[in-house]
Structures are given as C-alpha cells and as structure tokens.
Length: 120
Image (cartoon, rainbow, N blue to C red; front, side, top):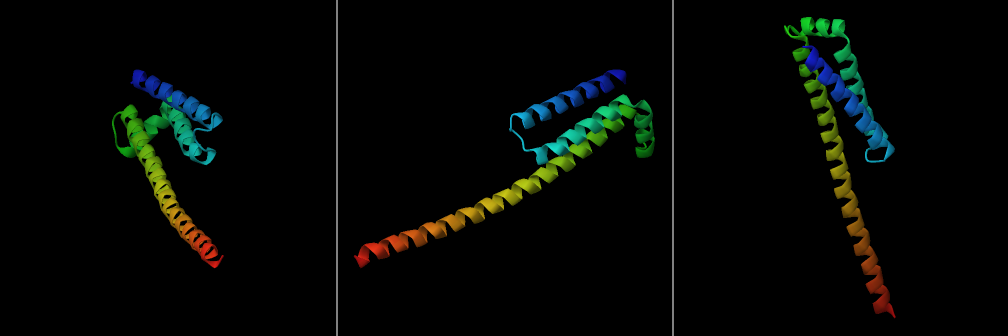
C-alpha cells in the first residue's frame, strides 16, 4: 500500500512540475492549466493523508484505500478530459466560422477588385 501511495505522490509532484514548466514556457494557457494543477494537488494531498484516504475508501465502499485513490483520480481526469473536449469542440466551431467569414470577405474583396478593373 505504501509503495503505491509513494508512486502516486511522485506522479502528482511530476504533474505539478510539468504544469508549472508548461505555463512558464507558454506551452499551455493558464486557464487550462488550473484544472491539471488542482487535480495534481488533490492527488498529492490524498496520497499523503492516510486518514482522508481511509475515509474516502469507506465512503466509496472499497476495501483498499489506494484503489479508492486510483478510482477517484481516474474519474477526475475523465472530467478534465471531457472539459477539454468541449473546449476543443467550441474552438473547432469558431475556427470554421472564422474561415467562412474570411472566405466571404475575400470574395467581396475580389468582386470589388474586378469591379474596379472593369470600371477603368
């Protein structure tokens, strides 16, 4: 049990460091890093607090506290990934709308250019 909790602690510290370096180097925007940072901190706190982990396992009805932690981490990461899927979908829709608007503007610009050419 202690080995798995130590591994989860190391994983959470590595995730915190990766998020901080990614924000610092502008690989990830701050508003998107908050979810990952919060999940990593929660993982760190739960992996180091045996009382909270035992309580979580009892509430979930799972006999093994590390298994309860893994289940909770999996659920949290699924929620984060779902949130990012929604953000990506919205960005894709906005990108399509922007491309359509640019195409319309190019068409109007080309029409004005052709009109100016025939008017001379």
